[in-house]
Image (cartoon, rainbow, N blue to C red):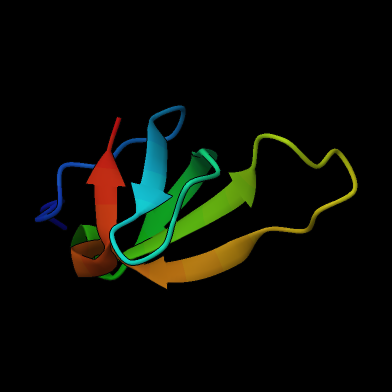
Length: 58
């Protein structure tokens, strides 16, 4: 399936709205439109899914 967002595992992203903390992309789903990220500043944080249209590449 084509990756429409262009995000790849290992990319560092932030949320467009109020997202100051960088997150690392772990995987992409739904043709790149769902991005699974983990916060860079919290080693105990779990992975979380985000809408790719609400993320900004650093």
